[in-house]
Amino acid sequence: MLSLEDRELVEKVANGDFEAFEELFNKYKGTAMRTAYLICGNKATSEDIVQETFVQCYLNIGSLKNPDYFKTWFYKILTRMAWKLSKSDKKNVPIDEIFAKAEREQNHESDNMTKCLESETVEIVRSAVNNLDEKYRAVVVLYYFNGFSVKEIANMLDVFEGTVKSRLFKARRLLKGKIESLNYFGGVSYEKR
Image (cartoon, rainbow, N blue to C red; front, side):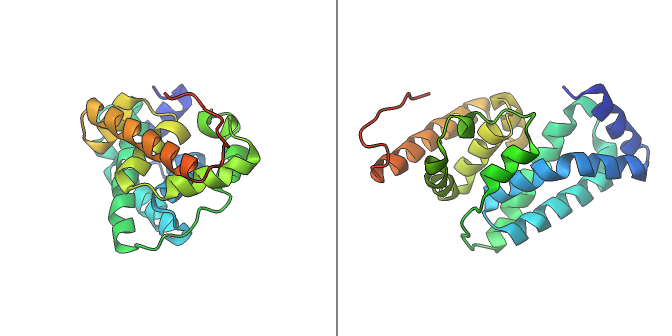
């Protein structure tokens, strides 16, 4: 559910208020960039994804029937755009300081995955997430880094909730295998979700 302030912004944008669109852009651009970057792993492509997502948002916001679903609708556009544009750009660029930047920019949002990690493990997790297939990376980014529910992610990706759960399960298993293969934790076990 959107905050009252965000709901009013969305309604104003739907009615053609460009200043409200600028405000909405400024409010969501950081999170959108982080999400795009975590999905595609390339800064230049991420910028294109975010730009194209906001263009599509502005052009099509009138089709959004309920402003309360703006975030789900917006991230659905962003995720599809990320898949589309990252397929044309298959470069695998390591993720640079995105976790640290995201924490500074999003202090008010919970970031369950990185809060529990020590600074030395962040690089390994970054690498492991970056090396996941797009479909697994997308659900990990949306669930852990953006805090969306399984139901919201299913709506964004046009898949069943069970598919999202399955992808999260497989992604966690792949991440665990990757991290354990690096022998990083030296035999220390950690809880499975």
